[in-house]
Image (cartoon, rainbow, N blue to C red; front, side, top):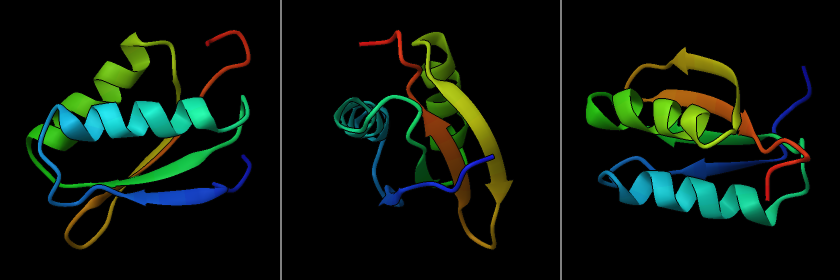
Length: 80
């Protein structure tokens, strides 16, 4: 697995704004470029990964940290 090229800290960002910001940033990156997103527990970690999967994005990793979650995600080449 490749290393994320950048980190998007969305701790404290409510739904659905955290999903929208993640999606916009992924669209700016080259396809297959991995983005690490920091999300809060609760609704953000329950909603954002599922919404990204449904949108065609690839979830590479999801890890619980002390007080947040690290999500590694990328955009496949065929997704605009």
